[in-house]
Image (cartoon, rainbow, N blue to C red; front, side, top):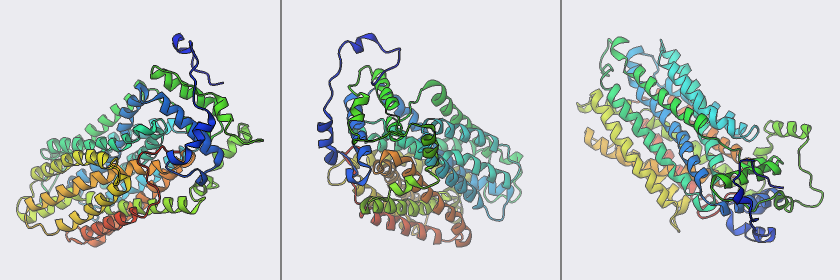
Length: 523
């Protein structure tokens, strides 16, 4: 039976809560879920529907709102640290004078790829809880160590190490948050992108204060370490901020393992216990029992609970079981493949321009006669601030009937590319800032919707793997961005043209996706 922990308040057990019948839940399965039930294992789909209903009946309460706050740290870190790399690129180039500065971005993207693969696939094998805490901890530690880098090679290695932690944030955090959300509040996945945008504001605000005052000018040919300590102060500050976020997650909040993850692993008793504990945290109770989940099983069904079965489950990632599950039907397979392609194109387009944005603004500002360090970081702060309303508008657009996730994502992605093309027409710094502001606004709408839409269209038992596939596609193509920047020459508009074309192509592909998740529960 579904038990709760011993510290449950007595009045909660005074009267049993009566829930819906299995037949009532299954009857609404087709209309209430993103993915058709025939696209996944039937037993799993029925059990997921029961858990969805149980979470829905508990409602949005104290536990989910706490989770919303600490999940926001992961969203913030995902943008914070790539922005850090872009902001320190110019002073690092001035101090160490490396022959190929974009190699720093390459090191970062290699680390992001490794993190996306390891944490994304791994959380479907060893669960979400450990990954949820370790990703921020590793990022903070390596970020702080990087402040002592004696050479360009050293900062490159440390960038790869801290990015290994960053790469796991979204695949893990989006999975665990979505699995505790009632369908009525899935829009909060989009709202989380406000944290993503605010992180960019915080990074640029800190950079404006430190990098603009303790950094050599881009035209300085004899920059010494003593004159260029700003980026080291910056790394210590951001690393310390990330360490505080890790401490809040680890010491001030107890994260439960996802009930759907546990159910997918055959641990129905534990899944029911977690649902009851969430209800207790919210000051209510749940009707869910193990019998509700057992009733979804066909005759002769056996849960995989033996030691050998547990080992087999852990080896499933090697046999690609979770990957194959995402291609079991033509429609689900196309959805997975097309989403991977969209993430891949954006993964190349975004860092190709955005990772070098401070540098591009500095060299183009110098060309226009106003490329001071102060002005460069001030303009980057303006762009970051404009991203915040973009994230909020993305959350609103994604919930409008007739537009939904697909419409908002497609239009914002195409506009992002259009504004990049337009930026090449700028003849002064004000015009460049204007076009870049429009780009920042549209791209934040795009990411707000993309981060919410992607995990919603994967079934829970394979959600970590689906997130890993899309994130890995994003990171693999991101590796090519610094290579193109090296050979395409950042002093020409070629990288900007390539980036803009890729955004437009991705926006068109979004329109062909078969599933729209607005107003529906995830399986």
